[in-house]
Image 1 (cartoon, rainbow, N blue to C red):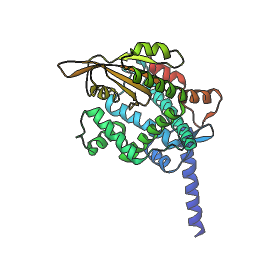
Image 2: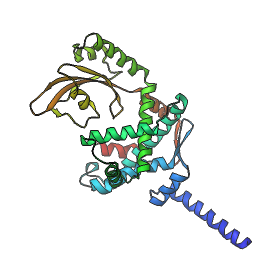
Image 3: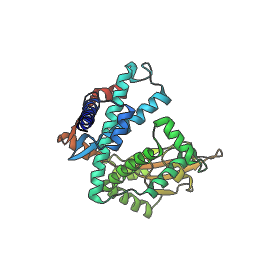
Image 4: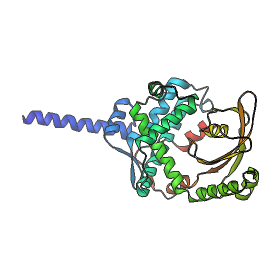
Length: 310
């Protein structure tokens, strides 16, 4: 009995040591260890005192890796300015870590502000994504699940988890950005009093390098144009009518849209004001400058990101 126990104990110790080496030294992205980290909440980094789950980092990287290996067929000539495939994968590893850190900090703030994402909200978001990407609601959930698994390697449960993290990050970004919210409220009041107020005039009043307000036009696009829901909102308007503020699927700010015109081909041309969210990203940058983000593995340098960006 003692011998069997000793052997079993030794096997466990060896497994733990090998796993530690694979994850924290070799930094494997192997499917087996991915599954281990989804069950065991091992830390891969720390942001403002909150631990970043290794499984979240690998989930983000798994999506990019699967997409590259299936849809993009990454090759040296096509990516990284003629660099090696390694620079491309390093870029996505750095990006995966950035996303995992950001989501962890968002969760910390969500706990602080009692912000939650319900299953019903996730269901509604999936429905909106289906309608935006396909232009119709007839596509089945099975088709979506199969497509997500083929392109990104995510099971339905993993996809819902990822979507929840994204939605939570957006909800926190909207909540903490009082400046963008006030600007949006001000613009809403201006347009409520006089809807014909030129967007350029509004931007001139509120636009400055600090808030980054933009006025842009879509050009002629289809009513189901994949722009996060802006075209769909504009398509419901009459000429020169305004709608907003709108929170698009991208979750990057407040938008006001004005329908400029329609044509005989069923296309629309609309103008929009964007009030971007900045506060949450600024908080992340501040944490970096104050050395409040610590990594437990070596992550690719910023050089890998810059090379790919070129």
